[in-house]
Length: 173
Length: 190
Image (cartoon, helix red, strand yellow):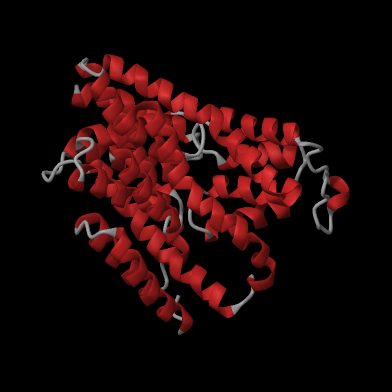
């Protein structure tokens, strides 16, 4: 039953995931940790870390939630349900793109989405760095140092993840 | 089965000849894209295999950013459809996700094996916090062109307070916020 619930919910999120995984991450955390209790908040950030460190689209994080809930089958079902409905939309809408690219409503919709996506990605970062109700300064330190480094340099982000891991060993273990 | 793309500069472009080539191309994007998938998609499809012109690539990504769902997942659907119809979409998406799925599961199994070690837990949590930092940096980058627009700053703050801090469900917040933002955008304020 749990896996069906997960599939339906991820399928719903897929349809509103403007901006990709980062936009729906706060909602995933709310549902998976707070509402359903499928993982702890601490495990959520660790699953996210594993998905970030692996290659491929970051939507693969969804498959780790599925894996946690229902093993290998859960992983495949979660990935299919978070990417499937969006894929169906993309398949049907792409043909209309040329026709409506310059249409006022479409341009307005894109402008409307931009600030919301920013707010939601910011929420994703905040939620990840604040797993419990009491903020942990060590997580915030690592997150803000990484953000500053990313904005100041053009290095492959993988190095920042490695540095974050090293800082985690020193500060958190 | 080759459908040449309708493209003004198609002289320099060779679309994938068959489904196998399409699959291998997307497989090589998924397999190599440590640290972000978009630069690798560009390298494989524009530079190495020359399936697309740079302009066409940018245009396709623009469309996929406008649609809900993962950018490159949507690009695999759109490009697969353009070249081979529904079979192309399925093959491209499978190619993109196959290896990364095995990678994350392998990583997760490794992690759960050593999760009782506090050093491993600290390491992985640190990586997660750094990942949160990357999100924050991305948000700041995307916000820069909006900085001069008070309405945009209000929408950013509002959605952050509602969803990030207030933990209101996105299923409720997204339609409301999108409607409000759309009205604001139609008035030329965004």
